[in-house]
Image (cartoon, chains in turn blue, brown):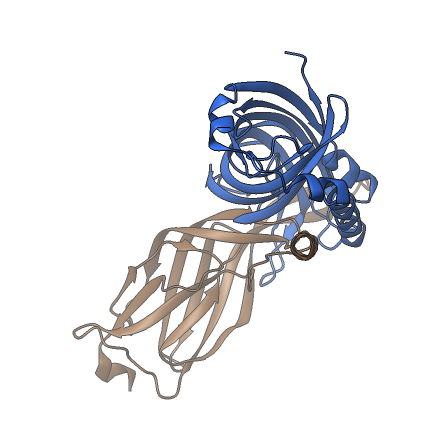
Length: 235
Length: 175
């Protein structure tokens, strides 16, 4: 569990993306105004994009325990409201160094929600600065294997701890902020920072999930990042 | 730009957090109360508690032909340091077997025995924190040489501190 590597990775990606959005030419363009008439004339449908999150794949390379990736489909309405659907797959197979407990889980997850483009009055800009909300859900099973439990008072008996195929369902909400920048023709890249709040977890008798696909580690709240390569579909 | 850097720093810090419970031990808490008033009863001198369990033990006998014969028998394991100087309450560990027996030694001649029948529930909250053993009380039986009765207040015994049993006495006898 190399936490320092992941932190460096996050900061590097954040800086890189920020530099893209804060280029001098973009700042100059941002001074142009967008009249109310122009807003009303803007067609409802502004296009559909499909993006692939690669941040979850990269974290494994930098020493993380978890691999995940997802595809997001966004429909741009009036360059302001962006309904979003995301489907992903998360997996982990890790053994904690301190407790020698192994946890294994692989499962798909789903999110739906909406982004709001704060730059809707500046359509000439090659990017978005947006906020958004999501509802996420995953239903999965996991395996846990721990060392045999030893009665600390009487010394025996020993109790084995091994539970395979434990089923659970988790739902959560997300608040997020992000940027999306046009890098070449119909190709964009962007990142989002996400604050996740766990809503509901199916309780089981012997264990709680350690990693929840799409949500992250099983805390009441979590922070997450996505870094996506995005393509605007030609229709 | 500074906002983005601050957000990134918070995020990087958040990735390393671990949220383990303060204690992973499970104890059954007994409070001593007066049978009539339900006020707390205090034993001025305090008393000690011993415990024992019955568990399966494998005996190995070497037969005349040199083979080893294994026989499963029941054996008692005694722990004489379960709790020292119980005055108005006590917290006792339950065993990993299905029955745990405690002996309350008020004096050399005055004792009560409590037998708790329970389920054991191995539990894992977080792989970074280790496993825990919780218990669910199914039944309690006891002698009434000194105590009058025992009430199960909360049958679930886990790593959260809470009252599980009330033991009722007649206050005069405890002094």
